[in-house]
Amino acid sequence: VVPSGELALGEVALRPVLNAGTESARMGNPVRVRVEPPAPPPVSPGGVLGLMPEGIQVTVGDGGHAYAQQAAGDWLKTLGAGRGNAIAIEAWFEVAEPGLGQFQFRGNLPLDGAVVVDGLELDLPQGPGWRSTPISLAAGLHQLCVRTLGVENPTLDIRFGIRGTQTLDGKHFRHR
Image (cartoon, one colour):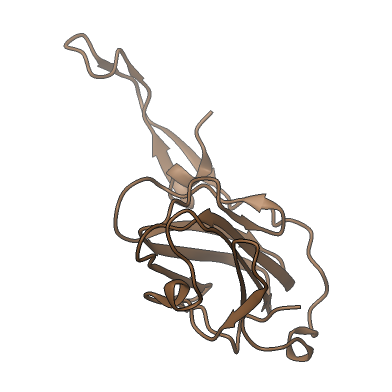
């Protein structure tokens, strides 16, 4: 089984390799396959985002909720996040038509297993710099949740888009 996130979408060629990484490695004939995006998870109907208050909801430790207007740079530090604090980020967003979107994350916070959209955990690649992952979305209202632990001087940039990406902001990402 090859996770679809490791393949390009559309027509691709897969080539089997026996004893990969050894001197006796042998390559088989390529097999052409079509890779489709995964089916989107169920979603709430759209049209209600404009009724929700603006801002990205953030909870630090056992404190109350704070609201940010942009998910960029040291925004979590300005909301009181620091070393060892539990951080919960919740934002609701709407997608006008079904499509394959992308979330992008950059910062110094641990994100393995921390990012969930509509109850589905996103699998982010390892490494420094921008980490991105595709997600298939149906038209309608969606929920992004990020749960992580703070570090000293936390930074986190979050971007999202279907046709290009932009920094999460309080106008397009709302809270309940």
